[in-house]
Image (spheres, helix red, strand yellow):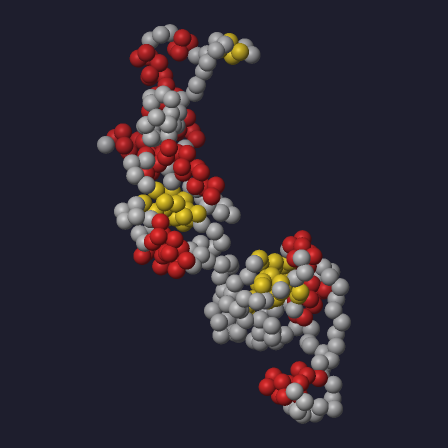
Length: 317
C-alpha cells in the first residue's frame, strides 16, 4: 500500500521533514519511493521556506492510490492540493496503545484524565520540539535522500561473474573524470566490468573491498549509469585495432596531442561565397601541418583554457 507521509530529518529539538511517498509494507528505515516536498514547522507560516510541495507529483501519486497521513492531508488541504480533511475528536487518543488493545478485546480501558471531556482537535501546528506521531523516531539520524545499492547483493554478482585481476569501474558523479587518455589506458585492459549507478549510489564498503574504481563522464548527474556506460565503451573501442576503418584516423583527432582538432574542409572549393583556405590547396605538406597546428592551438586556447594550460606545461617540459 502506498503511503504519503512525513520523514524526519534534523534533530529532535530542531526537526525538519521531507514529504515522501513510500510503501507502507517496508520498515520505516528512511527508504522511500519519491520525495514530494519539505516541511519545516519551526518557521512562521508566512515564510516561503516553511513548506514546499511538488503539486504535480503529489496529484500523480494520489491518483495512484497513495493515502496521505492525517498530518500530510492537512498540509495538502491548506495548500489547495486536495480537500481539507474534517477535524474530529478521537477519544481513543488519550488511551495508551496497550489499553486500546484490551478495549478491542472486550475489556475496559479508561483514558488518562477526565474521559467525560472530549479530546481536543489536533493543534494547527505541532510544538517545534515535538515530532508528529506518524513520523520517524526523533532519536534517529537524518535520513538519506534515497536508497542505496546494497553491498551484499552487488558483491554476490561480482564474485560470481568477475575473475581475479579484471578491471571494475563504478560510474559515479564523484569519480575520476573520464577523458581521452583514460579511454586509451582502459583499451589496454583485457576485460572491463562496469557497474551502472542508480538511486543515491552504492555502499562505500563494496568499493573498498572489491577494488572498484569510480569514474565520472562529467560534472552533471544522470538518472542511471547506462547512458554513461555507452559513452565510455564507444570512446574505448575506437582504440582497439580493426574498429576504425583507417588506423590513422584516431591519431589526428581532438585530445590526441593535448589540443582540440583543427578545422576540416572538403569540396566544393567555394560554397556560399566562402572558400577553402589557400594553404590547404597549396600542396605544401609542411605548411599544411603548420597551419593545422596553429589552428588547433588557437581553438584550444579560446575554447578550453584548461587544456591549453596543460598543453603549454607539457610543451615547456
